[in-house]
Length: 280
Image (cartoon, rainbow, N blue to C red; front, side, top):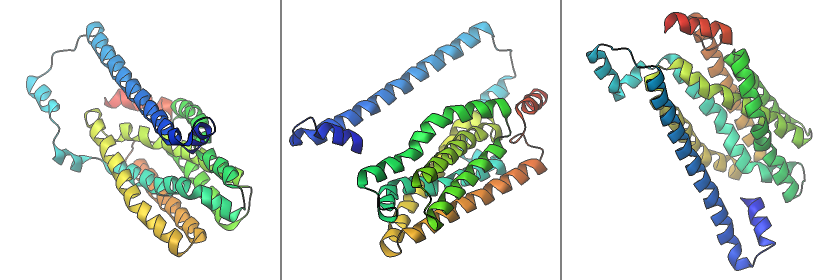
């Protein structure tokens, strides 16, 4: 919101600046809501059309009735791969969001950059993510091998934090690398849930994964603030590095578990299609 605030402040009276900025943010939120409603309507119409084109085959009523109900206790049956995926992504986000929050002051302090340039450097993480996520998504859909992409993203994130912790490499390079890692991890982790959990539990699984990430962020915010106030940015960067390393350990366990159980998380697209055709 800061660039919007600066843009508005240069063109309006001071008493109107904050109100116009917040109103702009509210309009963005409204557009997101309308887009979600439109997506829901389109999805519902698609479901209706599918039923018309492909009428469902009659099945046993008891099984149909049973499939309608999802109990909280069913969460205990979620596979180990789901929990490892959620833990790995939550650990990665422990460093990402707090870093972006603290990044502007970090770049201004360590690299002696102006507040405006530090803000630009900091914003590169999300700017790179916005551009590269669709490209990585297409690549993952075509190639498969999701866990290889996940590990690549984690390695990029680790490389970025090591560079920012122990070197004075140009910070633009560091944030671009972190943005690429963020894109790979995000476009990989969330689709993995759909392969690890049965379709009828998918909404519950996404909710649980989001809750794990949110709880981690809630605790992490206070912890990061404490580190900055008492130990400084060097220790904070070491903490962020450790978060990525722990995420890599969880991802490595996920790879080993999936490989040992004959799972489909790291199959190629063709292998996964054959696997699903045989088991669904």
